[in-house]
Length: 490
Ligand code: URA
Figure 1: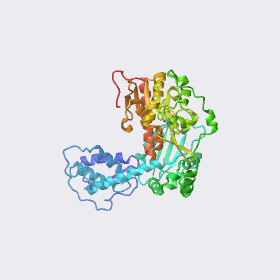
Figure 2: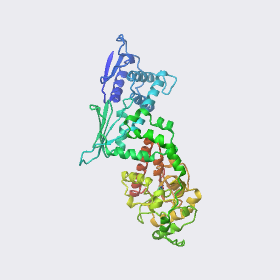
Figure 3: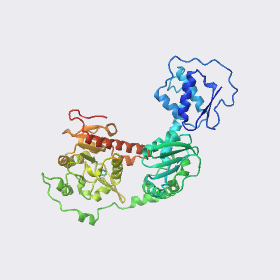
Figure 4: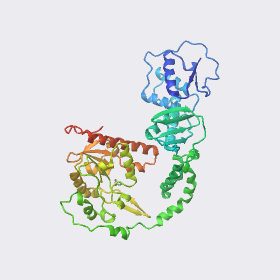
């Protein structure tokens, strides 16, 4: 009987190298005792030593597994089942010997491994969603520092934390769990056994986060069962916002009723007085008189309801023109494109991509805000095809005047307006298409789409996509592809 002691850190990699050696020596699965750190040994611990046996027959083919099999097995090794190493080794041998096929769900051992893999993935997903950092920056520190406490169901720290390293690479952080602590300092991720089991101290960002959480909680869309299935109660004790939930649920019906009873917002007299005199439409409008011309535009009905027209902004001759869908509530009031919540997502992604917003020309496919009044709110409504076509006249004018090297279409409306194609956006994102005149258009996600994703992990991934695409836009304007060779998919 061979006893294998796996380290608590780097467990999976150590298991893999032992498996290679054991399999090459023909060691049967029931001749190995696996142990991690000081954790209890596996299912054979109590068994009497196995009688000396000849090594099992080794297949002549080298030990290789498909990528799917390897990923699933190594993920399942992050389960808390103490017998997982022995079971996984036995399964590897059976796969190698051709006794079972990967994916054969009629095999109970394989089925159990896949269930454990699923449980681990779910635990990792919950860790990504429910880790709450508190700021612990020492005064004057060059990098901000954060700490979090999380209690996963399985030993997933090494598998789950590279996500945070990617997401929060510009700050230092520590995530402690009851077993391992992940530490990210100056761009390097390391792991240690947890020494101090006390959760980190409170900080002021926690109060801000709670205020934000209450403000985005929509009482009219409350579904308690969906909410508790997405945010199971066992995580609540380490979520600062969880303390607010019972009260938010209790007061939701009254607040929803108050929203329904409230009157729609009508533009105030003050806003009406701000509306400039409307000049007549002329064919020779340039960028300088675009704003008053847009204020006067009635090519479609939207213009009559919005506060004002929102012209693009940025330098004439900008190499990059960013095209959104239409102004939102904040843009309609400010008279500037992409300055509200979607604009903040865009700005953050542009910064991460190394793009300077002030060097880009930022505009929208549609120049007025289309909305339906609901209570005191004005809810965004997607412009229809006729409205987009009516506004194309303005977008074409801006394209002519700015003459960018590259257009970036944020979302489906802009992509449709620029390319004339209404193919599915997610299938097109990250690709470069062309306008009817042959100008290149890089298709990417709209920041409002990202904001609307309910799942924080999906939101983070979508934001990464937008950053990647903006980075690519920056590279394309720095090194335009050969004019002959039309760039298409990446
Ligand atoms: N969404 C857009 O597409 N553009 C804006 O200006 C604001 C929100």
